[in-house]
Amino acid sequence: MSAPESRVLTLPNALTCARLLAVPVVLALLVAGSEAWAAALFVAAALTDFLDGRLARRRGGAGESRLGALLDPLADRLMISGVAVVLAVKGLLPTSLVALLVGRDALALAGGILLRGKVRVNKLGKAATVLLMVAAAVEIFRPGVPGEILFYAGIGLSLVAGLLYARSAQNSIR
Image 1 (cartoon, rainbow, N blue to C red):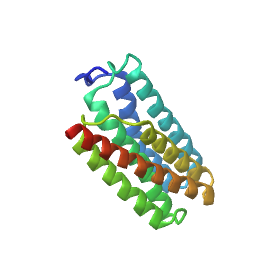
Image 2: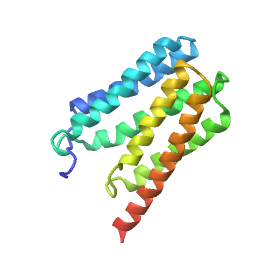
Image 3: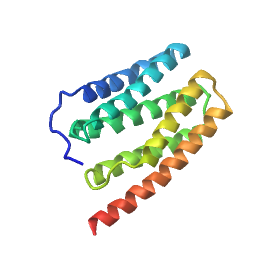
């Protein structure tokens, strides 16, 4: 894999920035009780996550940028955690689940900052993010047990991925 680009103005970065800008809009729509609009924008933002990653990797990593490598996971964490917090405040998700999710996100971001460049993103981590996005979308559309189960599964999967990242980092440091 080639080194990430230092360029800032790339299409994948623009998509990631659009996703970051969508976070407060989705949260405001949820607070206002416009769940259908919030869900539609959330799903569109989730699709940009898939698209920006695909575009960035299309040329064997040549389209990836350092900025994108930092902003992409931040956008994911802010969107998923933000939605979960608003849903908990509205009484639609247990606060214990949201505390676990936000704690896991803080740990993932801190680990990502410490390990940047030492380990590659693994497929299990990507699968966990997708599962958490699906959980958030399900919970927006139809609050209840299925969304909660998906959140717990996504958190569990991301914790396993985190252990694999730590192991990979430990091996790369030796």
